[in-house]
Amino acid sequence: MSVFKVYVRVLGLLRPQARLALILVAANLALAVSAFAEPMLFGRIIDRMTRAQAPGATLTWSDLLPLVSAWAAFGLFSIGGAILVGLNADRLAHRRRLAIMSDYFDHVLSLPLSFHTNVHSGRLLKIMLDGANAMSGLWLSFFRENCASFVALFVLLPATLFVNWRLGSLLMALVVIFYFVTSFVLRRTEDLQGQVERYNSTLAEHASDALGNIPVVQSFTRIESESHALNRIIDDVIAAQMPVLSWWAFVAVASRASATLTILAIFLLGVWLHLRGQATIGEIVAFMSFATMLIARLEQAVGFVNVLFQQS
Image (cartoon, rainbow, N blue to C red; front, top):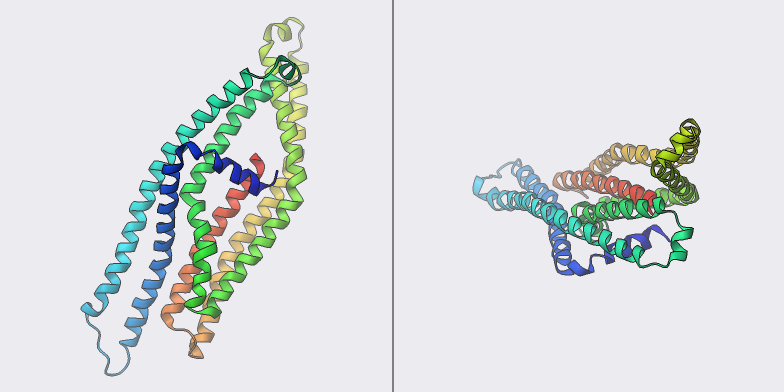
């Protein structure tokens, strides 16, 4: 199953709490709009102050007050909205995590005996605990970060083209490059991560067998052999996991490097456009803020895909 299908399927498990989930999505939409409006308003303030430097121009506090008030209002709304979303997302994720564990437990108990003779209890316990915790983390990430990131990347980012299509095109090019880099890493690590999960399941089964039969292990003096067997499995897990970690470390380094390069590119292109009369100073400042926000969103998205990929 692809990462996207896993994501959609896990979000679908929020259906019993659909009303609260939809409210949180709407709140994230409002937060994304607020995050987009702040740099825009700040850029307008800079332009208003810059024009006041012209000979014969005057600027009073009353001229700036509407823009400053709106800018401050959006900032305060972002803070308050993020707190409310975080609190309610925690409660929703916690309730659904426990409900999923209960449903899974009931489902496993009702399966025929032939199933249980072929599937180790350690594997079932690992699936229940790790799966419920992973889904809880996914729900929290979605409502705290990813929902607003999706709105920012797919709705508000294209809107920057109406502010200054040249600078907006540069930001969109960054997203496209990031998409191809992440897709490339996903393709290279998909089979490797599957091998890691198989070793992790074997590790859980072996540990469950040994811990569930302590009297037998001790009476037959198998402590050392069981320990060696577990360490061999751990070595297999590490050997399989390291290439995956190396690829995702490359993505992390690329995202950090892109932060500096993107801001530098926005500044240099903005200055060049300003000298040609095709961008104002306020637009340059606004787009540098857009770039900073965009990079943070991309880093969140890459980190989330990394975690989801390892847990799928």
